[in-house]
Image 1 (spheres, rainbow, N blue to C red):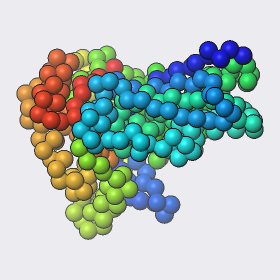
Image 2 (cartoon, one colour):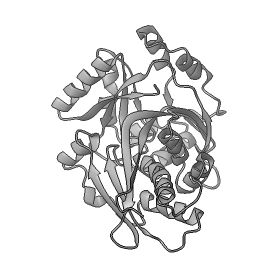
Image 3 (tube, rainbow, N blue to C red):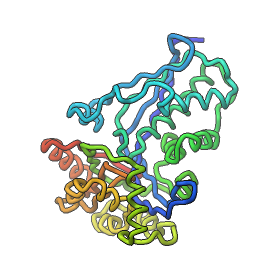
Image 4 (cartoon, rainbow, N blue to C red):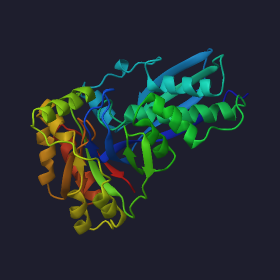
Length: 330
C-alpha cells in the first residue's frame, strides 16, 4: 500500500431558500418543508495515512473565507473545534469503518479545510461530515481495504444517523445542488437547478446563535399567539416554478424574491435583534431580498448580478463586516 494516497472530497455549505416549520413533536423534533440550495463556499476533507493506528484530525482555514475573517477579528478560535470523537468528521469515519466491518482501525488522518462558518445556519459541520463519509470510503477502497464502494443511498442512510442536514450535504457533495427536504429534512427530492445561478452576498454575524434557542423561541411565540400558527406544511409550488423558469433577468429575480420564506427568521430576530441591521441591507441598490439562513445568524442577500454581489461584499468588509459573494443553485 502506497503511503502517498490521499483522497479529497469537497462539500458545499447550504442555504435554505424556503423553510416552513411545523409544531414540535413529542420527540422534540419539528417537521419541516425546506428547499436546500448548495452554495459556492466549500469544505474539503482529505483522507490519508496517519502516523499511528487510529483516527486523527487536523484543520486549517481557507484564505479569504468567512471563517478567516471571523478568526482575524478574534471571533473564531480554531482551538475551539474538537479534534476527537466529538467532531462529526471523526464520527463519520467511524461509521464508514463499521459499515465495512473493519474492527481494527487503521492509521487514518482526516484533514479539514474550513471555509463555512461554524454554527452559522449554513451546515458547515454537515458538509464536513458528508465529505468525510465519501472520502473515507474512497480511501479505504483505493488502498485495497474494502471491495466495492458504498452507494449514495448508503451514504445518505449513514448521514441521517449524524444529523438532519447531512443527507442533503451528501447529495451536494455528489453534485446535486438543489433539493426539497421534508420530515426533519432527511426526506429528499431532487430539484432541477435553474438555468442561471442565484448571486448572493453571505454575511456572517459577529456573534453566535443557538439553534435550540431559536426553535424554543418559535414554539413559545406560537404558543403565545405572537407568531402565525404553523398551518399545513406544503411544497413551495410557486417558488419551485419560479426557479424552474428563472432566466437571470431582474424581473424574474424580483418575482422569485417575494417567494423566499424562513419561519425561523422572526424568532432568530427575537433572540438577536441586531440581525435587523443586516437584514435591512435588502434596501441596498441591486439587492432584491434578505433572509436569515436556517436558524441563523448568517444572513444572505439576493443580488442582481455577480458584479453587484462582489461589490457589496467588498463594501461590507471595508465597513468591518464579515462578507463574501457566492453563487447558489446554479
